[in-house]
Length: 295
Image (cartoon, rainbow, N blue to C red):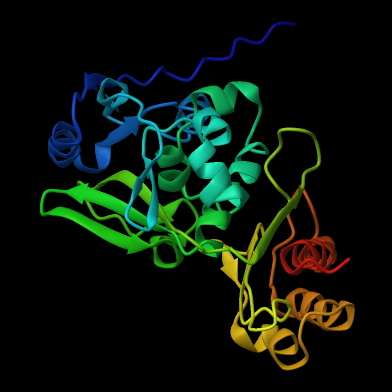
């Protein structure tokens, strides 16, 4: 016996190119929610293939052209079209935000890193993403341009929930900026995946500024991906042992346990909530040891 299955109809869409950010804004304003930007396409194309997205128009921003990272005053500037490969290879990124350069080596696979862009990673807002996690820990900010002009949004406020950002209708991500010294005292980034190139089950970024005696971190930020609907930043109360007792194996163990206690991850096909708490504790400990220089 044979059974004939009707294939799902192929959705159609307009294909348009934008030669500048101003043109991209115009087209996004014209198409509204039916318009989707495409640069590397490493997130959007799989969603199109799976019929999870069906835009009325694809707006290709590749004609805007890739740009190398550059310095503006006391900030590292990463144009939205900067490919992941460029971030890894950039001496400026290695010097001023080595945590980002390291984290991007863990993004997807070599094909994703060759074509994917930092603007795409930021705009996609995957709560397991390495780039959003690092940007929140490094006090980065996202610059968007829209019909009303450009505005800057702290990374800690830009990621709202699953695949949702604070960008408004018609706004497009044009730059990512990271201040110098955001982790001058040390940093650590670790993640666990089920298989190579998978999305992170849990990832942790820790950044520390040096204290008066060079040992006690008086400015620590710990951000966890994969345990909430956006990058989850530990509140100051969870970090109190570091500030009151200084950086030591004991205080770091306590902070790691605090982190595992406060996160509220969900169980899914990839991992249980309890396993994500175990990973949170282990990765917070590892990244803090790296960030504080404790042997």
